[in-house]
Amino acid sequence: MRIQLTIPSSSPDPRSGVATLWMLLVSLVFVACMQYVLETGWMMVVRAQAQAVAESAALAGARSWGTAATDNAANRTTAKTRATDFVVNSAVNGLTTEYANLLMSLQNSDNAGGTNNNPASPGGCPGTSVSSNLVIFADFDPATRVFSPYVSPASAGRRACMVQFQLTAVSPITQVSRTFQARAAAYWDSAAAPNRSRLVSVTVSCP
Image 1 (spheres, rainbow, N blue to C red):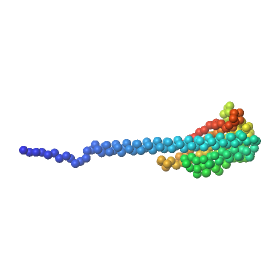
Image 2: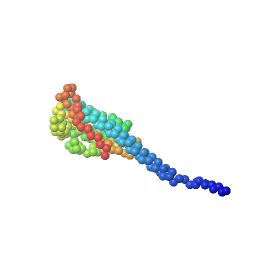
Image 3: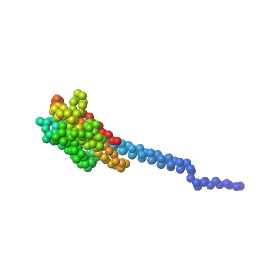
Image 4: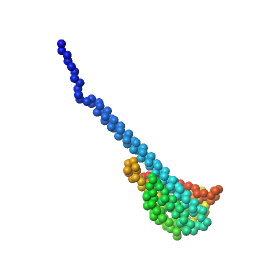
């Protein structure tokens, strides 16, 4: 009687290699998706923080100028300083160094001898350059929603302030530099009870 033994092959099943490859691909896709989600979340947080700073600075500038007893260069400069200080002393993404570098640029938009303390051409407000860091005063008409920085000094009920700044932050997720721009405008509503500064518009973008 003969007994035939079958010895199993020691070569690996080729299907196991395919499964390993699929696992690797799925892992890579999962990591990429998680990175995208975290990066998007971080960008949304920075946008929200930048928006809050721009809003608060514009409201502070409009309030300071609107409540001034007289419209003179000293009071306008004080109001611009209020708005500028709010930006420079704020933090976005936990960093204040980005704002410290903006102080000179913001002050460059101030001209005590110009209309509403604006220089002759601060970038063509409101269509200012995306790289401009500005605090601009203007006359604002709530009915037509026209923001005019070069008209005669605004009356108490139409004194408006626009704040625009740009900052660059490094993503903690991808280590890629992202540039954010924030802009906000507000005016002093002396007809309201109680009187208060009102937000006109806010835009935040990340090219």
